[in-house]
Length: 106
Image (cartoon, rainbow, N blue to C red; front, side, top):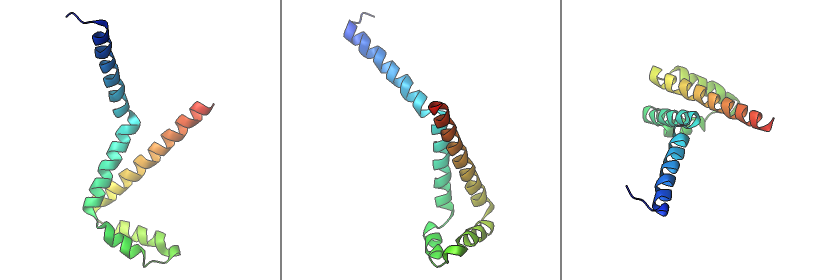
């Protein structure tokens, strides 16, 4: 394999960029975000978002929490699991981001 210096440099840099991209895409944060997006997709497929939005508009501001809890309790178990997983992953992502920013600022 006889490569000139510019060809060799391009080949090496292509590999460096590929490794950098794969590390970014497979970082723990991005994996959690991908899972959260999949959960959102499943939630949107499982519930009628337009009905939820239209019904929540009829609820008084102070009763919104009660409405959401009542809707959560009366929904299918799969939707409850998706919602709890999404909330747990969201809290985990926020916790990790906060921990990383504290570590950097110290």
